[in-house]
Picture 1: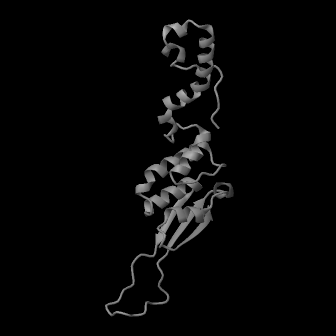
Picture 2: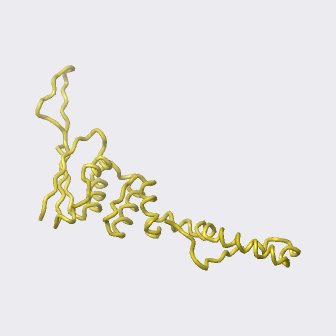
Picture 3: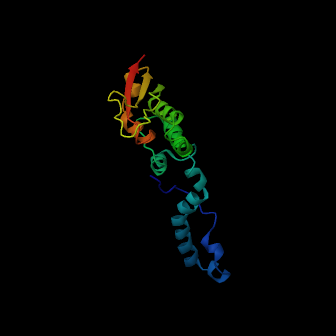
Length: 179
């Protein structure tokens, strides 16, 4: 969590904003110095707000909150660089959400493996109204993730990732294959 930084000074001392009659009073100087110490972390945070909102620069303990606001979840076991990449993809990924490229990129980042997506493709239709559709036809997407080791895939909820990135009306099947 964010906390006070020892020795952090305020670039905007409150005593400097007061009329000169108060600047000469020792009590007022001590009182405003206390306020300066209290608000210095707030001023520092506001001055660096753009860094907090950039997944590449945000503090590690702030990254999970940022990812959640962007609509994705991070695994605590992931290395910092993977967390940053997933959070950055969440921001840019809204325009590719629900696409093959978007799902492939997000799942590859989460698992660290190679992702293949196979779509059954096509549709079933008839020129005659009320025609019964073939029972054996069902559009589905197969997601195959190839990983090097069990540790690479451990802790990744592939079903949750698929629900997050696939369109809601598309059924899918996911499998993990070891090299």
